[in-house]
Length: 201
Ligand code: SF4
Ligand code: SF4
Image (cartoon, rainbow, N blue to C red; front, side, top):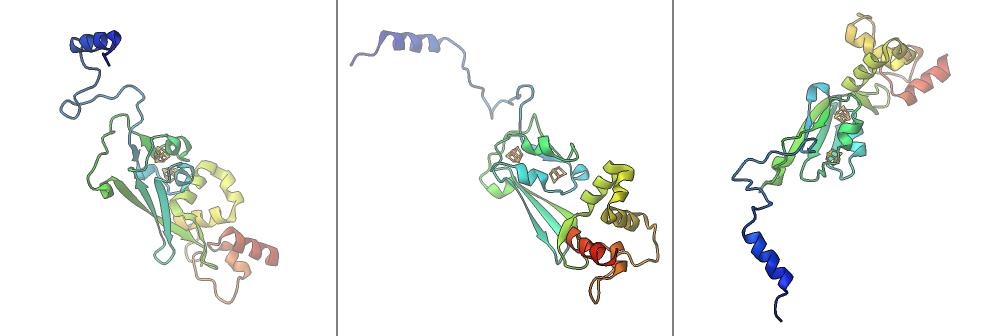
């Protein structure tokens, strides 16, 4: 079958027109304005709240809590990232993760090089051992809420612990022989705190 005249014409034109594609990686590529590249974490402004893991549609962000060590590990696998920007959009501090407008080249022979880890100290219930959240998360909420944070006994206890307002008092001790009234001022998860409040107040 003879080629169509239109196709021959296009082939001839393309011989004399410049290429639409860039010469990357031989020539540096400059992304356009508002380009969404690799998410970059600012550990100083990330409190380990796990919100970004919950909104990430491709499950690129996951976390595991080690109650024995009291550590939350956040894993970010950028091989799975689709650069949707949900993590940046929903970050509770607004500064924990931001999509770079420059870093885009994530090609690797070894995919493990695209994985980043963070560790955050956990806040664990002194009675039942449940994970409450991270210490940084509670402190961030405390700062954000201001005086309203004192409405929460847990917040008050964590602030006391941080500022040493109650030096000498047993604020962070093991719960022994069941929950007692004094444990209201211990680090308890909402469920255990509710038990104390119902029983003793
Ligand atoms: S940009 Fe989207 S896919 Fe990538 S880590 Fe953030 S939420 Fe997940
Ligand atoms: S939402 Fe923000 S503060 Fe929370 S874990 Fe993700 S990056 Fe960190």
